Image (cartoon, rainbow, N blue to C red; front, side):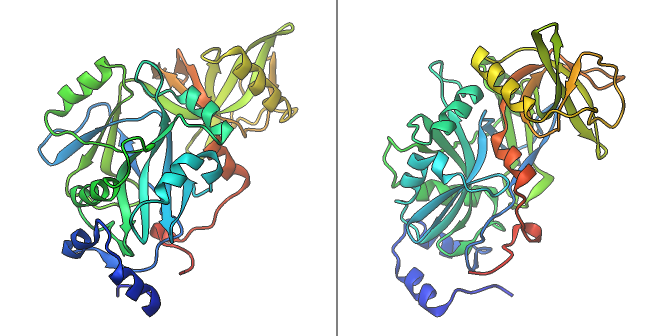
Length: 351
């Protein structure tokens, strides 16, 4: 049974002249109801090769933070992929989102910083988010989950993207909120072109796919290089000289050794990381299996870092040629401040 709005709000919404109003009316699977407090994202599954066939579209894979924009009553909030409120770190994006001509909306996308060479830069993004007043942040919107008091997750991807494009067209060209265009055609050719241009890769999405939270194969990602998030479990030193961070990753519910990372950071980033992990020192290794690292200084596994690498060794799964890309602050918050959510992305309470 579809949920409905209170009479006062329903009458207000029906009286609004929004850009998407008539379009939403034409959708067969748009469900009226209150705006969810948070929706768990739909995550793309990692694939070596993009899927083939005419039932897929392809988008650029961005090098940034996955965020949701929540708009209601003229106020916009920016939430991380775990539901934490980071509005204060992206005020310019929130300010523009609050001017969208809609009673309410939930937009899925990614915040990036575009460097001088035209490519997105994760390290720069981390620094700019720390300012809170940065004018270099750009939000690439690639999906619309809720709009004009209707949940549209059951609509096809192409219908949702059409509504998103219509919603965003009222923003000025100078807005930090941009619509993420999609491409059709041979997926391997598109991926090759993206990699040749120095991009991260592509994300492929089923044209008629609904938005279902979690990992389910509706979206896939085909990166140009391997990349993942690992936790710092210690650091190494030769005499008084720093010699890299030891990394761990969860495998079958156990924290195991993933290798050592020795570069990719600036001198300032390295010193800040050392100072941060020094506060987490412990006497014993946090790893499930013992590893022989006589010069290791072990720490509680709380600092998450993004790492790019060529491959993993077959026997032990250690990273080959890993390079530091940045700290995952938005994921680290969840280690200390868990958020309660109900199943399937539905809000725990109505409002």
